[in-house]
Structure formats: structure tokens, C-alpha cells
Length: 317
Image (cartoon, rainbow, N blue to C red; front, side):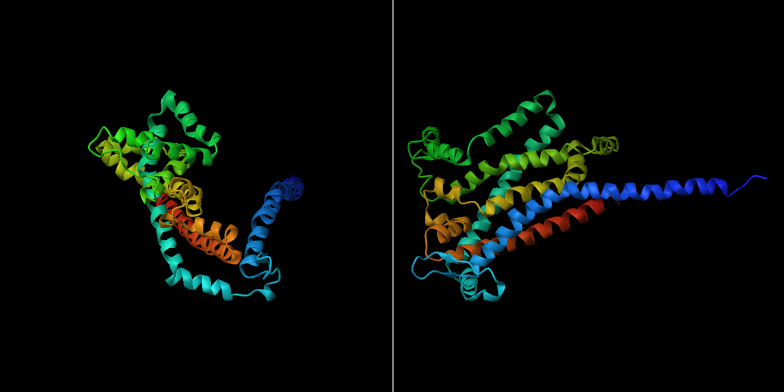
């Protein structure tokens, strides 16, 4: 008689021996992720706590340097409350609104310039793709400060831009470096549009071309196929590229410093943080502005993550 239980007893060791291997795999990948966790703790969490300790601490009355309150039980919120009041109804309110306007205009400029370039790279780049990508990456080899100084040379009263405009009805007597918001927005677009293009191109490159071909086969025009297929599918990548440029734009202070020669009429929130931390006797206000800016950006990031998840769910239905 054949023992029907024999195959079952032979397969039991295989199931039990798989558990140690699975546990070993988890331990291996946990060990791989440990350096990243320690990095986040050492260079993100601890510095953030140090900023909070300065923001809610005091200032030495003689040396006028910040005295961090490392224990949360010693935190004082009086200066932080005054900072919030100045943001709501004080002079910092104008700076915050101006920063939002500049960042919004710079982001729109990045979308208008960067989307066509990224779309061309993904669909029609061909053999020139690597050359275009190299042209986008090459500016990163030069310091951001030097690139802004190059724009100062172009935009100064006797610079090349005014010389070119002198041959047009517009005229060449414009003071582009005298505190113009347009100059700041132009500098923001120039500084961050390569990041936008590279991030969006990486997303458009992964789109399945067969969706567009199916739309064309069903009678859609090239414009309709782009509006109904390509653009909706590229929304997650567009949001990711927007987040990549919005975050550094909000804390930017080099652009305004160089392109407007430190004009107060174009100050952004980053300039105020630099002023409080380095040029005033109220460093705790600068640290408080850092925390407020981070809170605003975290709200934006939460909205971005939620929107991307909802978009992905709609596209997979």
C-alpha cells in the first residue's frame, strides 16, 4: 500500500527551512538601511532639534549670542509669539507674501520653459539626447554664486542686455539691478529650471508610448492626444519636479542678494533668516523663521504626497 502521508512529510522541512532564510533577508536589508537611518538622525533630526533649542532659548545679554535651551522644560515661547505676530500683521507679512509671489512666478516660469524641453527629450531627443542632457548638467559644475555673478555682468547698466535692447524700441537704459522683482524671478528660473527639467524628463521617459498611439488610432489629433493622455499621465512627475524647485526657492537668499544688490524692496524670507542669524542681535528669531518655513513646506509636501497618491489611484483604475 502506498503511504499517502509520505509526500507531505517530505515537504514539511522545506517550509520550516524557509523561515530562517526569510529572517536573514530581513536582517540583511535592515542592516543596509541602518546607515541611512543614522544619517537622518545625525544630520536631520538633531540639527532640527538644535534649531528649536535656539528658537525657544535666550540670548546672552553681554555677548548677544544665542543660548540654546536643550531641555524642552526650559523653552520660552514669548519671542516666538512675537515673531508670529509680526508675520501675521507686521513687516514680515510683506516679506512672506513677496516670497510666495516670487516662488509662484518662478515655478510657473520653470513649467513653461522646462516642460517643452523635458517633453522633447523624452519623445524626440534621439541621438541628440545625451548632448542636451550634458548641456543641462554642465551648469552644476559651476558654483551657483559664480553663475549669479555672471548674470550681474549681463544685467548691469552697461551690460550686454541693455546694449542689445538699445537697438530696439524698448531702449537700453534699464536699471535691472536696482531692486526689480522681475530680475529676482528671472534669476530663480535660471537657477532651478535644470532641476525641474531633469526630474520631469525622468518621469516622461517612463511613460508608455502605446497609450498615445492608441489615442491616435482612435482618431485623436496630436494636440488632443497630448491633452487627454500625455499630460494627465505626466502629472505625478510634474508635481515631483515642482516640489524639487519650490523647496529651495523658498529658502533662497543668494539670488536676491546678488541680482538686486541687497535691496530691501525685494527681500525674501531667506534674506530675513540670514539677517536675524548673522546681522542682528536676535538670532532666536532667525531660528524661529526656519521652523515656520519648514512647517509651511511640510504642509506643501503633505499636499503633494496626497495628490500623487490620488492621481496614481485614478490612473490605475
